[in-house]
Image 1 (cartoon, one colour):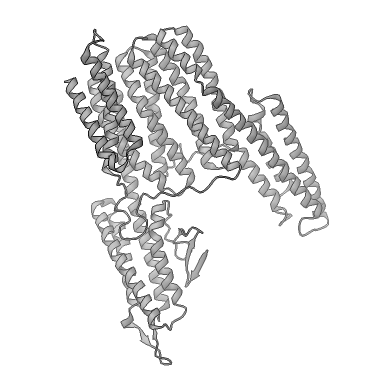
Image 2: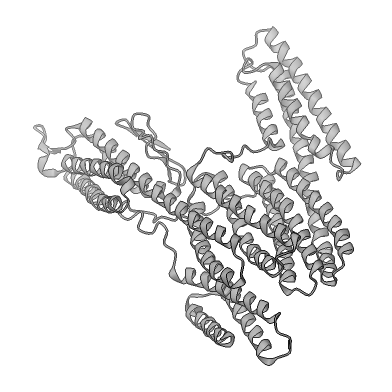
Length: 636
């Protein structure tokens, strides 16, 4: 609800979250709050200020009420003092924000002191009539102080949030520099050294961007961030194996193509993350989503229903053009080679029915205007209901077609027959078979890409539309990468590195199929109205304005060290496999033992990654470190 007292507006949802502490135009600081943590940090202060402002309507207070107001005023003053102290410390450490932060802190301290004085019992005056004490004699001063306080505190929070953005940009820049070094390495030893550094930097970047993703208020930005982070996560392992393959077979063209594609995709994902956090207006500027049928139907129904209230809200030509634009988008379904004849006919029939119902509505509309009706007539009301029902039936049919096709494809691809065949043909060195199965995989890729496009039309929310687009792009990119990896293996069938590389890309394909299954379930939930609100996660502390940024980027040291250890184990395991290829006597005991030990250590890491409980963390980690030390000793 909205409470407006003394010119200060406080907006809050049913969940109790302030959508904008600066909602009133007279009080607007010009700062948009984009993260949940900043928003939640302001709530206690907004509540206290609202309490004070609400009491000013009754100038005469009992001693109990007066004491309560005094406590609130002093609490605000103390909280602001601590808050400002932290803000000033941040300003001292970040010279580029020093002036702005200093000014905001000065205004906050001044406003806090003003509120403390206005609620001071000692300065209150007794009433001549009944002897009760009167406070808030300066009503204008209280409102002014409250406005200044909220404005300045909001500015400090937003400025502090810019530091988080700066940390993400700095982390991205470090990753880019190391990525450039990785791309230019010429020896495996140099690659191992630089990749270890790259892994540490990616862990840091993943933590920063993960917190930012969960903290964003805009659901579309969250979905775009999730898509970019998913690319980086999957591409990190691809980069490892693709680079190793290129180093092992430097003259292989397919291996080079494979590696270049991974590096390019990682750079694009890194750039997308920065565009989101900085809201850059570049060529990737919040890419306008393709017009979906779901949104087209929603807009069309809204226009039609508006005619109930205002017969002159739009022209018949506008309604007709809206419908035709909507019908045109259904061509993605009807023109598809994978749409059955029955499905195509059903869609076309529903489009024709929607046209007929719209024409009847236009006729009833013209008649209502001819008799100068002030609102929709009975005939017009019936036509509105029929038109809305016909486009709803169209949406239901399109949803059934898209979801049905996706379900069928997931069942077929669950067997992974083309991938198995490609692996087998590559291991046999059969280039002709690889070419044949590559054509099969390419056809499946095109089906999946088109299906993702259809799902985007019926997804129901913009975040899900973004996820559909991400799935479409992923299948489009990984398909050719699998083929180039298979060609490399076919050219070098005895290469364990080439085999591992193909496995990694096939796993990425399978992972995206699993993601598509989850996406399909979410789309169904939205369509059937079963989607519940997700629990919010805040990267900043929740209540209290004093220590809002003390944990902006803090993750537990245990998590970070475990992640870094996993990357190092994976790299060393790959290293030993590479070295083993050089041994002539593959049955040598030390070779087998070192391989087994490396595999055991990495598998232990994978286990702890998903099953680490509080009391077992150190025991598991000790085991892994012991295994790692033994493995390094074996190598030496």
